[in-house]
Length: 270
Length: 264
Ligand SMILES: Nc1ncnc2c1ncn2[C@@H]1O[C@H](COP(=O)(O)OP(=O)(O)OP(=O)(O)O)[C@@H](O)[C@H]1O
Ligand SMILES: [Mg+2]
Image (spheres, rainbow over the protein chains, first blue to last red):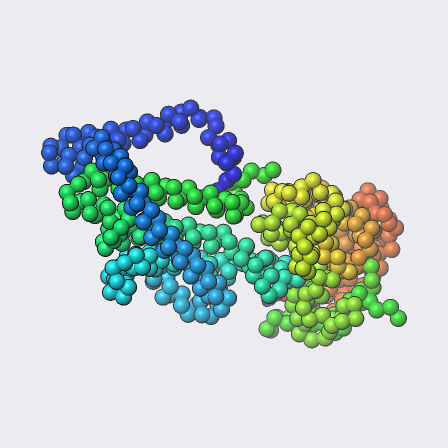
């Protein structure tokens, strides 16, 4: 991601227009929502409550602590799944990149597992691990770990020969070779895997909550619908959206901090 | 007898069936600036990589500073043609230059201090905190040279280091390299396919025979130093040597075609 100043520079000439658009767009969507809700009779306004009802439910949910609690539970599930996916994916990916023959042998299986919708494993894990948090976290990890793993292995294998030769010429050996040459060289590719894992582990954590959770925003969505409180469900859905947005912002921020050089094509030549 | 910086004896290298070079005998004295020229595919890069220890010989031996070359050593550093790839994009300029010292276990601060010194030498000290990809091609290659020097090697191996820059920048880089070489007096083995570059820079030119028959030519370049792009080419010796190297390269090419008409 480009440093903040270059972003601003790109936006600058039409900033007034843009600022207006940024406000008008969402307003239009909310307006359309409201119109749809109001124009479809009682049944529709039940399943698609008008914005004020949802806002009221959200206020209520935050006031009694249930939404915040749910958000924290979801955050914990997601972070558990994501962190495990990154740790396992990195370790296994490095090993696979190191022993290329193993990587080649496992490639088809790994590619299959990557394309497999991870949530499909949930019923199996429910049997294995029970109906607790462990199952949600494990499902989330299972769904996202392949992206980190495959990208790490590929990143390690694709280090350019000139980079490796340069390391050798200047005496990078053993662990130094890994830490100072191979890993940084593979880092942008690894970051791609981590970014994918970030989105998927969150989606799958919420999905698992909807199906079998006893806490978390996914659980609140499912529970509110079952107990005939659609406004509360919508409030939880919006909260999921906000949570995801925050998670991605933090992710982008960290990436820019850790790999300031990785997206260098958008950086102007100094 | 003074031990040469490098001695290649009956050196040969095969990649499977393909012969990269064969029957190379070469001694490079300490502090010499040697230019290696030859047709494309004659094995220049491979010879240099073998001297660096990046490749093992198939036959014969290479001895550097009295020890057989079996793997890379920071006493022989390499400047790659592909500077864009060879500089690490994740390290800033100074950190690229301090890399060799860091790999030897020097602390970051000490390594950086020295790196700044070498950046000064190539005239890029004020760009120490830029990323390499923010610099022009010529600047990048100067950073690569600074990095190669920062390892404090006794020998610099350069493979067409200025092949990818424009003519103007190339001349500036040649002058900068000569200035540094005059100051530090390291042994340099400089591979190029540009005869003028070879003549302008070196103490001695060797031409690798592209039919695998060792060195087709090995001559001293007794042109006065310091050299200049305006004056040096005006010496008779310059044009004579230029013609003979050129003839050699062209004759070699001609001899590969069975019915090539004889020139001259
Ligand atoms: N890693 C390799 N594997 C197989 N063959 C190789 C390898 N490296 C070089 N060769 C072969 O060895 C021969 C000499 O190659 P080399 O790169 O040393 O030539 P060169 O003189 O540097 O040519 P150029 O001027 O084009 O750079 C060529 O036929 C090349 O195909
Ligand atoms: Mg070459």
